[in-house]
Image (cartoon, rainbow, N blue to C red):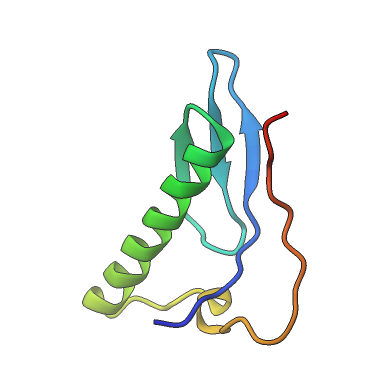
Amino acid sequence: MAEVLIKLHLEPLDEGGYVATSDDVPGLVVEGRTIAETVEFAQDAVRKLYESYLEHGDPIPPKLIEAAEGEFELLVPVAV
């Protein structure tokens, strides 16, 4: 399976935790207690959405078709 890079939008929730959405994957909405957990849930949800698109013959969002190639920068949260 190829890897793709998608942009996640993370927003803190008033009650604690975070919610993640993405313009690259319409319909993606996940919540987690920490940023790392939210990102992990988003990765899992995108894989499941991709499998669902294939299974049901739905159009695949263009960003999920583009395989990551070459060098790239990635911002990673680090607790300090």
